[in-house]
Image (cartoon, rainbow, N blue to C red; front, top):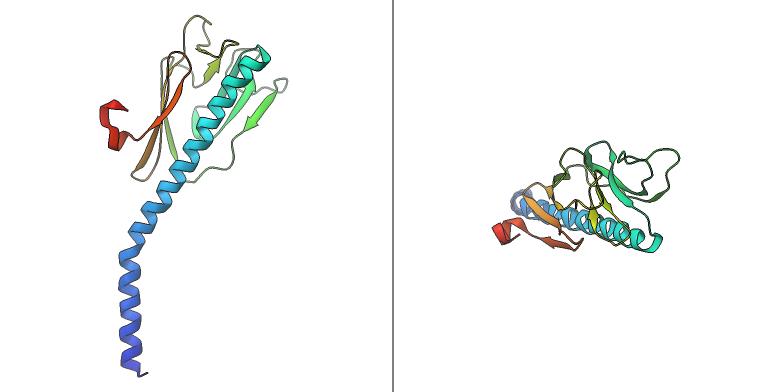
Length: 168
């Protein structure tokens, strides 16, 4: 193999790599969003099932105030402040999340960042057990997105806002 053949081979490999990188980046972003969505949905379902099982209010709150992208906690909320205090039992902590993950909440009670379930399994607001806390979370990494929707009765569904548009 001559030097020219070697250089041509290196150039071809470089071009193929340059063409493949955006595809791999999109694929990685897709997997990051899918994984985080699955983890977040599982935490919501855990909070709901624990509220029913234990017969008490269970909250899902950001691990760091108002920033879901830094993780979340499922806890037995006793003082209605939507954060983990030293005397409250934490049932679940989220795993480490991808660095560029963004989570945007759009909830009925937007003044505080939380999801709470009462012993019937229905979402509730911090203000009253008769006022539901429902809405959605959009998780994204780059252009890849997933939306988790929590309904009035606590039903959780996942959809793709890019593909489904307004139906999501």
